[in-house]
Length: 56
Image (cartoon, rainbow, N blue to C red):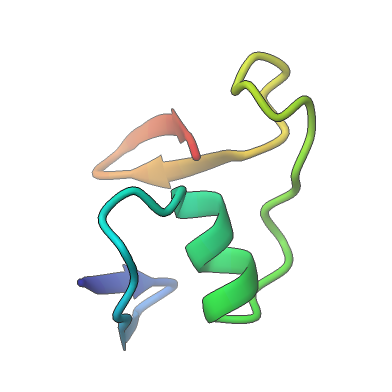
């Protein structure tokens, strides 16, 4: 999988079922995105994707 985050391209090799939040925080070490409620309801895990807000 290839991700473009803040203008930097990151190639990651993770299982397709891995939550985006886990990839961002654990695989890439980018801790700005927070874990909140764990069920994508509170919005703490929100990240911008293609101009829209998506809960990760």
